Image (cartoon, rainbow, N blue to C red; front, side, top):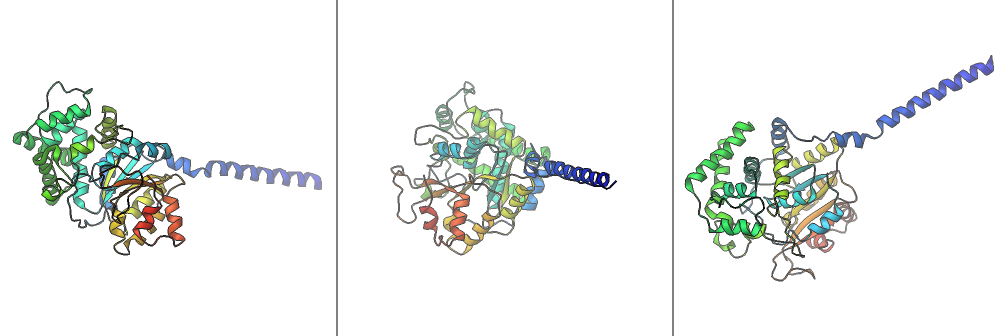
Length: 382
């Protein structure tokens, strides 16, 4: 009888252990289940709620930043593709140069975080234009309100597209029609709650693109930047160091990649300060909830400005709260602020684009090895 009781106790104990083991099997791989729960697309309500809930009050910057002022931003793309895994999450700052990185990395979700509310609204303008355009030719025609030759089909080279665009003149009636189409797409189709100030800002941005055309630059209409900064046209024709053009206008495939992400509400523009208490933190919590990590974080040269105060420490603390892995990368621009040039920096280039590992920078920060912006730059690589 005692033997039978012991045997029953053993079988009971074994069953409990087996059940617990099975439970662990189903419960443990939370990251895989959570990763699968990252939405394939966001509804309009979810998209606008994220913008509204995650964003901070708009801040000030001295320039409109209509387009990038970095001519070397494609130089790191070959290395970036080798080191960064596709299907993750991309973070960035600034206007449309983010689209080129997104087209190269193919993330599942992208957030563009900028201190200026106008940047968020510019991205909404782009969103509408992508959604309303069947191909690159239609997109560029709408962006600048210039009629393009009918023989410019999907096989046209980027050079041919911009050659035609640069010889065209803006059509005032077409501009009114296109602006209305953009606003209708945002307010009526998507039901985004744009304030009168938001509408005014979108009109300001769109009118600037129409007025300046493909020669629009970072500081338009300030003429001091006309010679110093590349134009939209020049940026779209830039290449990597091997002469390969990776811009989102370089091919219909790249264009369609961004168009699909925009249509699925998977490029989310936010208003936020890198050193702020809300935007980056909210993004980090959202990514943790869905079990995904940051693939790449394009910071441009924002860190240069953060190091002018103690805000750089707040930023690094915010970065430390982002979910990341050993392959998570920073993409940053350096503008020779210290008179230092990297050995392979392109002749005549005002800036150089650099890569750095996010965990490596945080380890250096925690170890007390970061004291200045130049400490950050020295550890970066081309």
